[in-house]
Image (cartoon, rainbow, N blue to C red; front, side, top):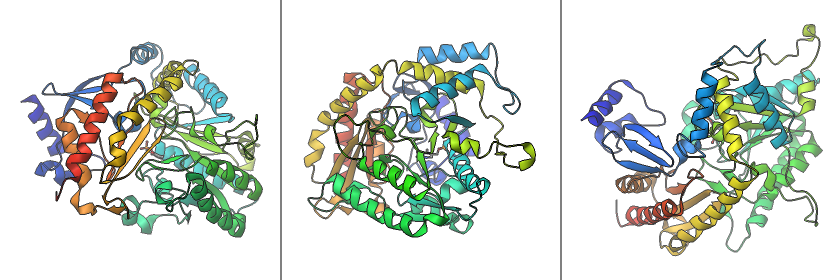
Length: 462
Ligand SMILES: *Cc1c(COP(=O)(O)O)cnc(C)c1O
């Protein structure tokens, strides 16, 4: 009863995100009223429980209401809730900036309050940097096809998928797009690395021709998440870092979805192999800007940052009269509650124990989904760390996709819900991106429901 009432009231007054509201009203897509959450589980108003396999839109790391995070938040609330961050500073923000710089190898931390606004800030900083150093012609951005960087106009402009972008195209900046290294598109017999290198050669050419007018290139390291969990070989990061140095172009790494351990390393950028695969060489790249959000607070409060290299910061540092300052702000910038929670979340990584546990869990998920790799309607099962994706197709040989109108993903979604699992597919791609605290039993259940959902969704005509 309360469940239905809450749903009715929601449908009457709330405009839900990324949703055709008619789907809810028509019953095509159930709206679910959640009243409580704990660990990897959500509970609805009728007492039914759901395993949160998508980490509440990729935000949650440690399960819901982790006791350390709850305690940190309550504690912080007793001393400082919020304060204007221009002209004022506070311990949680300073500590968080110190720790994120130490972990990323970057030097300066600029706070915003959601992923899109972090991307906006990074784009503006890059553009403004070139103005400040006397190279105003460098004002174009390069993005990869099929990439996603958020919904605000600047962030939307540098995103690829037409579903999100096309309607607003007349309002948007026009970046130059380079082909995604997405290895789902590799040729028969081609290795991930060869395909990735081949994709990179297009970007190389673009830089050779246009570097003089390019401000920055923005990428999602290793996994294009919203674009269907498409993945590529980390050599791309190595080649890109070299090229950006060579051509004098900023590299913006959008780790909003992949940061904080999702890909098996703390940041995805750490997986870039050394330039020449020699022994003993350190891997990993340092971008010029790194955008972080989503998992930054372990999934509890909204927060985002842009980390930047020192020479970028220095280009804005001058006498007031030089008019070089970065005059950009958001009201909730550096919110102490969110920063405190982010620090509690960082602590839960321990001395790399959480990442080691993730790598074991990732292997477990891979094994438990082995039957999908020979499924007649699965073109690919791919995995990078704790992200595992299944590409459902009509025919595997030709990778012929199901027509979008058949909404096979929705069938899988509904089936999984009926079994108590939240899978929110991206079109015909089903994926797991669970919180890090799954038990082996929960992982088993998750994989079982995933396999069933693929069966149900690919059976005959919808
Ligand atoms: C989610 C996401 C964003 C946008 O973050 P919001 O907090 O939703 O604005 C940007 N980039 C990537 C890679 C994302 O996954």
